[in-house]
Length: 178
Length: 380
Image 1: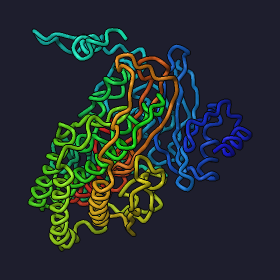
Image 2: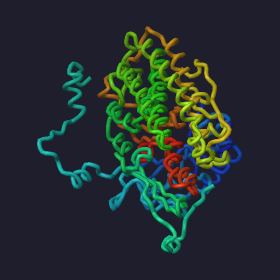
Image 3: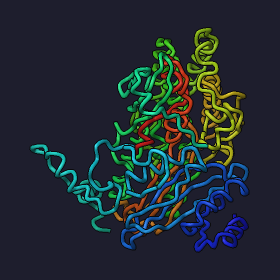
Image 4: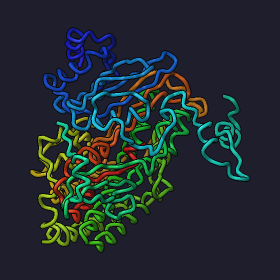
């Protein structure tokens, strides 16, 4: 993995490489180099399996971090290729032509985070949510409490508890704040 | 590569085609999802998978709860096999927090996972037979699954959602007499499997309808991300337990089982063989699991856990293939992000939508069950 990451750094100017464990590494590439990096990894380095695509919302720094988790069956290595993109009007190149299930992940990310993937098949079709007209619900600033208060009614006589306080009082009273 | 089987709207309105919703209440649907089928006569010409009927926002919920509070949540992501979620979440938290799990707990976890695999396969096998009209077989397999649930109740205190595997180990050692009772249940299931071989695998009608149905060409495997028994039936020896051993799998005697053609019939044969393998693994673990020693690491007060900032991906071989948890932490007492990777994500959508084209409407349920999918792991 060390050598692979060195090759990737030399070829695609990866600005971050992290080895989490012997069979898992993370590396970061520029948005415009993602596609060529994935093609290279798939066709020359044996990373033929796309495990998943996901995103992390770094709202405090106004960017999304996309993660493309790849797997090499020959070496049993996992490699996460990460790309940072602007959070405002987020858009990313589609990879549906590289893996046949790639469009499904992109469709989900469009619905849940509002990230657009121009050219990705059925990217605007509803995926999990039906008739949703609010902001993408997986964003960090989506207010779940406000959403629930507006959508559902409170059942009479039902009491809400602070879970941590309840655990502290009822399960671990002897531990106090320690 | 990506292929669209789209019929132009103008043709859809020509009256040659019928739109039919298969699910979400259809008994041939695995879980709460539906297939929007376009039919020409009895044959499917187009399919769209619809999920979301069971969306509870697990990943979002987990970002807003402390690490320990997520435990009662993760097991609910896949009803027939919650244990894999428990194990993977625990393993990811342990890796990021640097928690060492005692050896005895590793064996107990592994035993719990293989028992779960067998119970899940039993339920699947009944569904597979039922979708081809042999609903009596379902009664047999669910009865034996219930015997497995009795064992889970003894082992963990719960039949379905066990919450047995927690960060640091497991909640309890094996109860007295558990080993003997488990052996007895294994003997019973082994006898059942020979009956299943006679009644299902050698059944002329089952063979006629399932052979060739939903054939997965080996060239599709990597493009579509097909994993688990669906890929192994096509001849690819890929199994996370062998390729990236975890828990105590490297101390157990087993080989990856493969077939030579992945169609609905051979996928049933594949899982049938893997059930025998499961029984063998459970027996090996009953012989080798340590009967003394710690089964849980000493941990700080769970109310004050703060996992250092980091990210990892852990995976295991569930009944349907690679199942994984991607965890990102930021040093606070909450998860920054969790992504749950289940095999159904591709099997029930991209793969299903491709394989079902050209299939007779009567065989859609059989094809779908043969892919062994769980919608909750898609919509998380």
